[in-house]
Length: 150
Image (cartoon, rainbow, N blue to C red; front, side, top):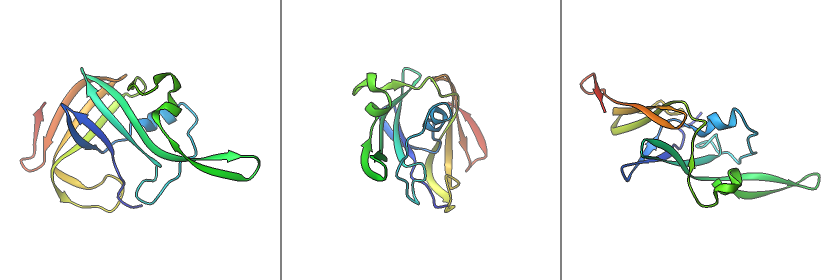
């Protein structure tokens, strides 16, 4: 498996890579679309997130799906947030299905692994989420081997 394209998250207006995939928790409970995948994006989409007022919001989904027409003919079409949450329109969705940890790498990459999200960085922010609400944020500083409260 190749290193994967990460989801993206905005914190205080700053875009960061997200080394977790919270939308996968949604697919555990719902039917997953037939995404077009690639070696660098096995899940077939990139989700764009934001933490606003200590709440995890899903802002966008960028991907393509295979839509079946008739018996054998398939067409590749864009998959967006509006296809998943029709009532949302262009608005963000509160990610109430998310309970777990979000990993956000920070600083320079110190160790590269050509698989998943296994590469390591100088620091890593870990945000604990419970039903879309931020309950804890810590930063692990691997250069000093310290856990910093965030």
